[in-house]
Length: 203
Image (cartoon, rainbow, N blue to C red; front, side, top):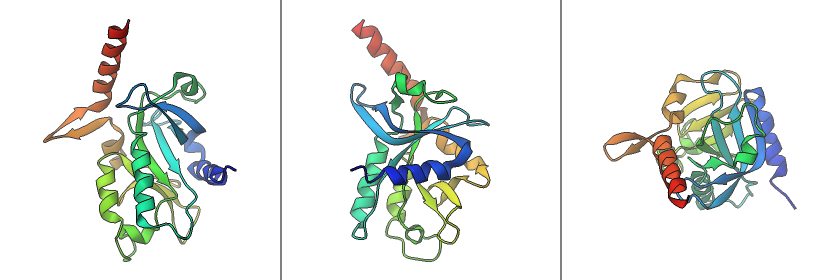
């Protein structure tokens, strides 16, 4: 039984018309190029500054007994999607077709909003979420008071809201750059160059 199917449908509905979404999309891992993954949902931005940008979602159906370690494991799973390449056959199903790799990943549903210190509650997950943002892993979450208010955020940094679209801060998280040591590198370019060199070697 596919217990996560209703959650995937809910996520796609909440993302609205800003994204073209597909379920259970085949990906090729960024580091292990021959390893395949299946993202629960992949969403491609339809228009605007980020048109063609692809993001992935790890979707679960949490139970009442979920502990912090389950949320942490979900974040780790989402990290495997970042910078992965969408299988070419799957990429052709999107409109527009994705411009490149998965630029970020999000968990849905996210841990309760109080866990991120956004409403004066406790903060057991804030440190983990802050670390996760450095690996381009964020949270897809609904407002507790207005369930149709939906956002994508990295810890306390909201990059998209269902009623307002993308914020300027989104550029910091969707530009393909990666913090390496004391500087930044263009991760997507380096990964593409590696894949090209590997393909030339094999041929």
